[in-house]
Image (tube, rainbow, N blue to C red):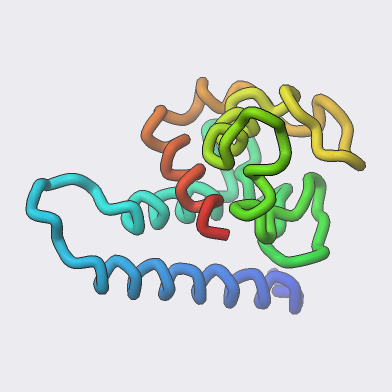
Length: 140
C-alpha cells in the first residue's frame, strides 16, 4: 500500500503529539496515590482517537483531521480544546466534547449535517475511555 504525503504528515503529527504527552508525563512525576495522571489518560485517548476501527465502527481518525483547515468527513479537530467551551452555551469544553461523543447530533457544527457521525459510542466505549478521549481533545 502506497502512503500519501498526507498520511505521512498525519503520522508525523501523531508521533509529535505522543512524544509531547510522554515528556509531559515524565515531567509530572508520581503523586504517590496511585491515581492515573492526566497525561496518561490523554495518551490513552490519543490511542483511541488513532484507532482505525472501534467496535465495528470507523475510528475518530477516519473522519476527523487534527490538522488546521483539513476536512475529511467531519470537522477538523484542530484547536477543538480551545473552541469547545464556546460551542454550546452553558456547557464547559469537557461537557461539550463528551456530549459530542455520546450524542453527536445534540449539536451539529455549522457546515455539517445531522446524522453524519456514527452514534452510540457509549455502546462501544467505557466511561473511562470516553473521558480519555475528552482529555486528549482538550489538549488540542
